[in-house]
Length: 97
Image (cartoon, rainbow, N blue to C red; front, side, top):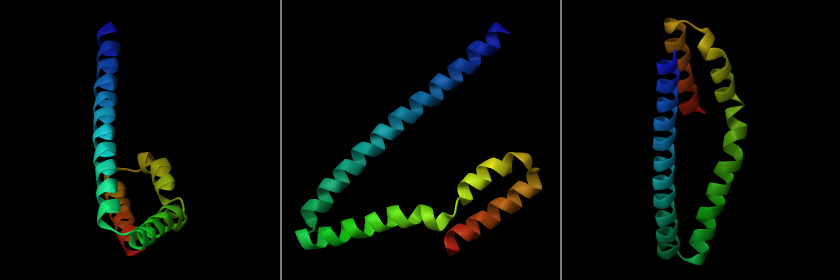
């Protein structure tokens, strides 16, 4: 019993460590790209770029209509065939809309 609990904590620590390291790497890369984009684009062009990304960030969650939340709630209840079918439908829906 003690070994199982220790093993679970070890897995949690390992996955959390990977998450933190990858998140920091992506934040660093995003910061570098942000600096490069500002340098390459002029003030007017950067304003357009920022507006488009602001709209994507604002409208994206509205367009998804809670689909990911719905999937995370109901997907564990399905069997393997239903999961594959639902995943393929979700994938298709995501790229069409």
